[in-house]
Image (cartoon, rainbow, N blue to C red):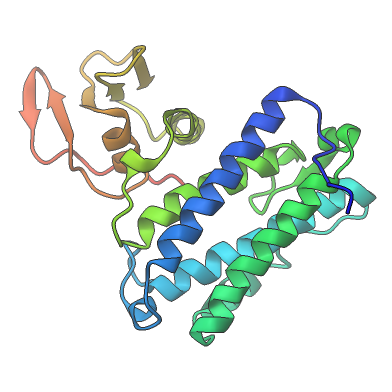
Length: 252
C-alpha cells in the first residue's frame, strides 16, 4: 500500500498540523481513561457533562472538516446552518450510548485528518468563513482545532491541566484571547503578565495609568483567561493585592 502524506508543504503549517494531531491524541487518551459511567459526570464547563464535551469536540471536527471541504471544492459549506442547530447537535450527541459517543469522536477526528492531509498545498490559502463570521484562510482551521482539543481535554476534568498544554499553544491562545478583549474594548485598565517564562509576555491595556495587573505562570494565566479558575494567579491594583483575581472578560 502506498503511504499517504500531507500535501501541505509550508513548514509552519506542518508544525501546526503536528500540534493539532498531538492535541487530538491527548484528548483521546483522557477520554479513554474515563469509564462509560464516568462520562455521565460533570465537566469543568457549567451545565455540561463530560458527554457534552465529547459530543462538542466530535461535532466540531465534522464542522471544521466542512470548512476544509469548502477550501478544496470552492463550494460554500458552513460549519453549522445556525447556532441553534449547533446547540441541538451537541445536546443530541450527549444522549448517545457510550460506544456511539466514543465512535463519534474517533471517526470525526479521522475524517478531519484525511481532509487536511488531502488538501492541495495551494488550497490552504483559499478563504472560508468561521461560525463567528470571520473570513480566514483555510490554514486557520488547524489552529481552530488545536485550541479545541487541548482546552477541552482539560474540561473533561479527569487529571489534565493547562500545564499539559504546549507552551507555544498557550502563547497563541493568550494572544487570541487578549486580542479579542482589545477588539471589544473589554480590556480597559487590565494588564496580563506572564511570569517565569523564557521571554517576557505582557498583554492588555499597557497604557493605563492605574491598571489591575493579573500575573502568573503561562499555564495559570491561560487558565484564568479562558475563564477556568484563578489558581496560580495574583492580581494587583495601586500596588496592593486584589484577592481573588477578578474574573477574566468574556472570550468567546
